[in-house]
Image (tube, rainbow, N blue to C red):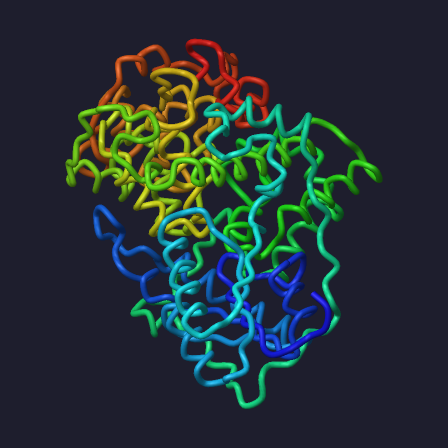
Length: 517
């Protein structure tokens, strides 16, 4: 577009960054005044769809508030950020009426129903006022228009087919060069106050010293994390070997929370990986970071293909499964009181910190859906409430996958909780960290306290049913691994963990052995 005119409102949602932001880039080139706008939409703080649990819990909310605050501080050096409480379509309508000079409303498109409803509302408001709508696709590594599957209905239902097609026949678009300075806000427009936790009726959560994600929200922290993980420590070069870890910051990239809010661009991560491979090393670990970004892309495109079906009880495969809705069993799961230590440790970490490892998520989801037989949406909505890195497409895509009604080519996949605990927490250090009432149990025995003798339990100070629950369920396949030494090693008391099993558990998506899980 040649020339500039009027005011552009940039409706920011899950794109809270100043780098590689096409909405801000376009507005800068096509308007005299640029209004970056973030709306705290009241619908995000209501109940979840099926079980009416709060949609946005304290960990997510704090991370969001930090991210908005950080973006304002960044943009104040370049322009500004306007903040309002209200539905975006209502806020935009008010601004159009108030200013009288708005010529364009710009936003990145999303993939799921509630977000699409907001976009529909924005189109209606702009149509009523004769204001141009300009949209972009900017949430994925590969652009929607560059997929080798057109229309989206042709998207493969198996990730491997998707991945191979993209790696052989698609390109990642380069990041955008952003201006040093943004055009000013429209005259007389107030920036607005960033709300507090208390404004949403929530308390600021206490940071647990055991957390594996002690980070703040925002673009600044996201870029610092990448600098640390790639360039300062070279941790990215061993990512594939460590990614199934459970304790500490450094076993994985931890990019997911910032990606979920768009504080960091996946294309920027891609370019930094390419640079790292040119200047340092290229190996399976550097590739594996891109592999994980592709999973994120895939679930986003699956949401585009299937629409509301990603939220359906019967899933993408329209399977009739007699899911239970036992709230007592669910409470045991969510509170980390199932009596299965590996499950309980992960669920307690989630409640205390808003974060859980990838390995943990796969296991607790399998336990809820396959061992307890509970409605998978209970787990999905609980994650929605608590996860600091909640992303609607990845969350529901992964839960469908775990429930066996999503994009999984293998029938009846089920994790063996005891084997998984032995493989990834062989010495029990992770369980001991989060289930302190079992600290007296030494080594790998901590994963199966119900299998210990009364004398051993007494010596450890554990009374099943009192200090720690009896298991709410025991699966027959667990018996093969009770009293087994981790990894078959003759030294079960040594420090064992994810690194020892790097070849066995790289990623369950590629597993072909019957007992691999």
